[in-house]
Image (cartoon, rainbow, N blue to C red; front, side, top):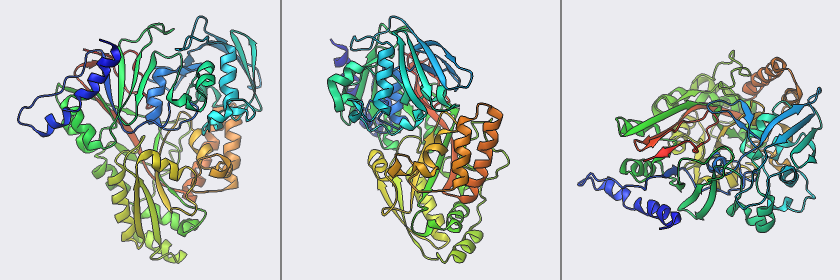
Amino acid sequence: MSLLTITRRGVLATGTALALTLGAATGAAAQTPPGVLIVGQIAEPKALDPAAVTAVNDFRILLNVYDGLVRYKDGTLEVEPALATDWEINEDGTEYTFTLREGVTFHDGSAFDAEAVKFNFDRMLDEDHPYHDTGPFPLAFFFSAVETVEVVDPRTVKFTLNAPYAPFLSNLAYPTGLIVSPAAVERHGAEFGRNPSGTGPFQFAEWRSNEAVVIEANPDHWDGAPELEAVVFRPITDANTRTAEMLAGGIDLMVEVPPVALSEFQGDAYTVHEQAGPHLWFLILNAKEGPFADKRVRQAANYAIDKEAIVNDVLEGTAEVAAGPTPPAFAWAYNEALEPYPYDPDRARELIAEAGAEGAELTFYVTEGGSGMLDPVAMGTAMQADLESVGFDVAIETYEWNTFLGRVNPGLEGKADMAQMAWMTNDPDTLPFLALRTEAWPDQGGFNSGYYSNPEVDQLLEAARVATDQNERARLYKEMQEIVQEDAPWVFVANWKQNAVTSDRVEGFALQPSFFLLLDDVTKN
């Protein structure tokens, strides 16, 4: 019997899992195959091309199929060698020369070498590259400082930057920096995202839309073969259904457990995992048009929402109230002097009255579920009630995750006044640079979907990313946080402690502070 048949059987077994849970007469549980890990994901991936996607939901698959030149050391956000064995940086921080690992091949059999590295970054960054049209590449911003990528010899590649860029190595470890097979891109073109090929511990087997993505062990991985035979990623958007499948034994690993369901997984049959990380859950406010074009109304929204109640009652203590745009997980760059906006509906009403925004009608985009989105419908409903209690008229529009992103990422102008959003990042530069600068407005390729603009913030962010001294970077980020909190382009809601649950058949699993899933050391009996 083929492995694909086994993995199909594992997925089909879950077809009875929910019924077994709901029909509690038998108390039976589905039995998934040993050596095959069934993962309950929160959504269907958008694509399996690491340069073309932005969601942690997709990244959790991709980190197991691809490698980068560097990677995050297990349990940290520190960078260590991967496809590059070492590197040298010149004195002014503008040249990075990498020595590449020998004897590595892509899953399609083609060779990994310096030409492959150059192809990857040129594809993202050079509009004249013959395969640039396999994008778009929404996080190419990560490598905007790269001026040239030069093949020194087959085992050596040199990146020349247009200025010192402090987050460069960290960004190389992020999924956007994962290395894809040039031969596979050339073969599949725009369909590469459905036919991925990397060098990682697992290789792509198949993608059955709205059912499963299956990856199999790569026995020739340079860092050793994984323990598992295969991993099946199942998209189960509804959190209650995902919980029921886990309880029934239809999945072995569940990510983003709803806070209200955590009590279901006490006892020896399950292990609940928790890990703080660089996460921010916020509301994007449309600062370009409508009531939120007035800073006072944006501040009013921050005062109006009872974030402590959301954290304690909706999220059941699995998060902390956010004070600004930088998560406290970045301890060296976090401004501890900032206090969150307090819950003060009277102050909110005063500001709304000053701005003449009483009774303003707001369109609020909410997602059914998505990467890092906690309990978005329940949170959205609670915030709707809080905003209406201070005089707003709030209409919620709810969308499936990928549809939601398709509406929010191009910008809220002409569509909505506010939208939920969550980001999990690798460096304190990433979120503000991609989502708060004026040059990050959607029509310029960024994620500033609310069109916030403050020249002082722009200057601070530009200065921070070229500062080679970490203390100076910290000073600049802390000043930026003060200004952004005052300007309130977002409602700063919560910093999440991610969670997951595994069955007692799974060993060797740990959550990463990056919020990614690394499964090469996991076993399942």
